[in-house]
Length: 280
Image 1 (cartoon, helix red, strand yellow):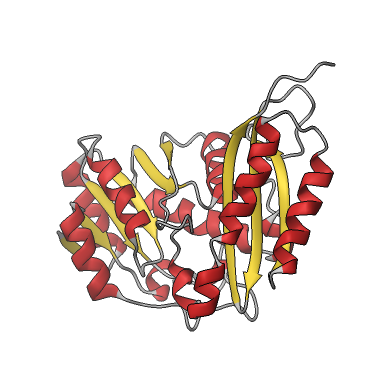
Image 2 (cartoon, rainbow, N blue to C red):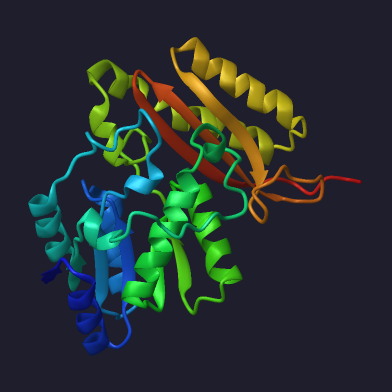
C-alpha cells in the first residue's frame, strides 16, 4: 500500500490506476471502516482511502483537538484489508488558503444539522475536494451516518459528479451498539448503557412495521425512554427514506434516526423500516 501526503502525489498515483474506489475517513478506524474497504475490493477496483480529521466539520466546543490521530495503526489495518493507496494530508495541504470556498447543501439544518450548525457544510466541502483529488468512479460510506450519506448522494447528483455513492450497512457490536470512533470516549458504565439507543430504535421500528401511524407519539415515547436512563436526547425522528422529511401517509420506506449524548459522548444511530400501506 502506498502512503501519500500531497495532492500532487495522489493525482499521479490515481492516474496510473485509471478507475478507483474511494473510502474517505477521519481515521481511528474500526471494523465498520474496514468493511467499507472490503466491500470496495469486491468491485474489483483499486481502493483509495483518506485519513483526514477535517476541522471544518467540527463546531465550537467539539472534539477536534482531542479526536484520536492513529495514523500508524490505521495504515496497518488498511493494508491488511486490501487498501491500495492511503492519502493522509495535512490541514495545510487540504486548505492552503485562509479563506475556503464552501459547499452548503440542502437539508443541512435538520436532524444533526440543527444541533451542529455548519457541520454538513464542512462535510460536503471536504468530500467534494477529495472527490476532485481522487476522481473515483465509486465512493463508499457507512449507513450509520444516514443524513451524511443522504446529503452526499444529493450533492453528487445535483453537481452531476460521475460517481456512484454506495451506502454500506452499519456494523454493530454483539450487543447492537453501532461501531463508532467515538465509542472509545465511553467509560465502562456508559458503554454498558449505550446499546439502549439501538434497542429504542428497534422498538420504534417494530411499532411502525406493525402499522402504528401516530409518529409523534412513537418519537416522544422513545425520547422519554432514553431520558429516563440518563441520555440527553437531541432528537428521535421518523423520516421518509426518499426525502429525509416527515413521511406522508402513502410512504412506506421510512428510517428512524436518533442522536443523543451519554455523558460527554454524542452517539447517533438509525434503522430503515418498511411500514404497511395506509388507507387514504
